[in-house]
Length: 622
Image 1 (spheres, rainbow, N blue to C red):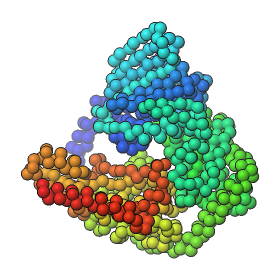
Image 2 (image 1 turned 120 degrees about the vertical axis):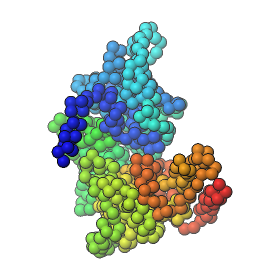
Image 3 (image 1 turned 90 degrees about the vertical axis):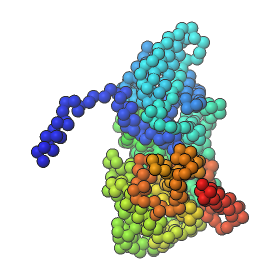
Image 4 (image 1 turned 180 degrees about the vertical axis):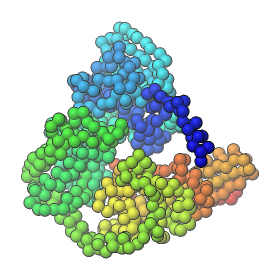
């Protein structure tokens, strides 16, 4: 023991203490500044956060009254952003894009109620890029600085330039840090659209396509609702606040919330105040003590506020922590006073909307009370069933713990003892839980939420996830559907996804539902082993390993040994996020895939079965 202690002491000397420069720290720990890295396949990947950090500065210029157009291009993974604002002061250009905690947004009047507050954003872009160029034009003079991996490489001054004032930023994300990546234009387009909704009259040109909004959040709702709303959206605006409200026919609550033009995907104090006073105002309008959940179920709404010196819960600015709009004015009071006056006035002036809204609330109330009869029994059943022993192999850290590892927590939903056994033996018990289904779950399309309590599998799954009362109570950051890569597995995926789409769409809307991709093949020789997730990868592996290589077709998760499975749910895990977009109406999707048999769906299934049969034949021939 003494020898071990001496060894530990010798490893911890003065030379173990390291001081990193800001550049070194950003490149070593990029997640602290931009969230996750990613490869561009998910909308919250770091490559999009970097675009946003640059565009935020250009939008801030518009907010301050300078420049009405922003050009964005992405070509060959090089992102360029040109605004026509005041331009960064020429002498300070290099420091403004490279020196941490340098900027004009800490105090004073150069910028007010903007997003970029910490003097970090564009510096992080610079230091995480293999190439970075900043150019500022002011009054016929121009200053251009170029960096490589955050180190200045060139500095050019020009006079008598014939260009409009403004700032140009161009960068290529560094593959040494991010690995291979690509941009999905859809994600950038949605980012651009969000900017236009919050900045009326600001014109964006993205890769030659122009975007502008004339009606703000009303445009947002009309362009993002995937079903016919029950009533025309209520659109209200005041100084530093704007809201749009309607109801659909589904379950859950769907919110788009913004602070100073920043999309706060995880809400925050402004969204909490909105939810509270929306229900309170409507209850007082009807003089009925409605349950808040009956008022808010099926709501589709947007809220935007402008805040002086907003406080966000992280550098990625996706959740507002500020409790005040201005010094001495609480967020709760500000939002509450606005809704109490403006929403009440609107409902008095639009009796048709008020009548439709009340009918929806009464329908929600009737369904909730109909459920309550089976709800108590279902809860008792969930308590009696030993989740930890029979259905749920839980992990130690959960999303609700709010510690540094909470965002790594996940639960695998799988079917059958062999599959759940393989994952259970392979998982990281600290952050990965396993929920085992017994057979195929019920097709719940077209059923009411009462079935969630009457069906034991759904009831226990709901209890394991802890989402019965509020999505904010969800115990895991990622809910992962893990099924076999065959027809039955695909069917189970659809059934589970239908469960969430039908009853808990917020799990999907907030980006928590994923599909685990498991390899279809293992190709190996005596020296090399490759796991292949597609036919293309299998062919490439055959070229690498030789035609004499052994090929194994994995038909079920239970066929993969725990040692092998550990590779597929570790750092190299492949997850596909389940997304709901404005172009994918929930009702139409469910009707096609899960409704009564139709000729179109039969043709779809037959075509996909042919693909599966072709793969099986090719493997046999190899």
